[in-house]
Amino acid sequence: MAHGDITHIDIPVTDMRRASDFYGTLFGWSIAEMPGFEGYPMWQAPNGISGGGLAPRSEGFTQPRSYVEVDSIDDTIAAATQAGATVALDKSPITDTSSWAVIVDPDGNHIGLYEGTT
Image (cartoon, rainbow, N blue to C red; front, side, top):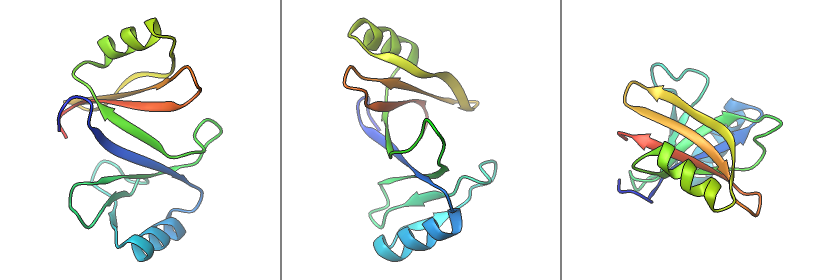
């Protein structure tokens, strides 16, 4: 994926089994937990490109969140805050080669940032 591409979409859910059955049946998504990511089933669309995760719903995570691939989370956060955004979640590692963060744009939309290998 290239800089600026949407690489992942998380959907907040309260019941993982129910959500897996719902989305798998409705859209034909393949949904499975990956080793090292237990409790966070990942979905893959039939096109083999689109995908994301079913994540536990929480107070600060009530709407689907798209993740945009960036070359540098640090640089993107600096540019975003200069342009009026705030940081909802600081940069955190996902794996040894990838990280994520969440910014809030001036309209209050939460946008995930992804840096690393997909």
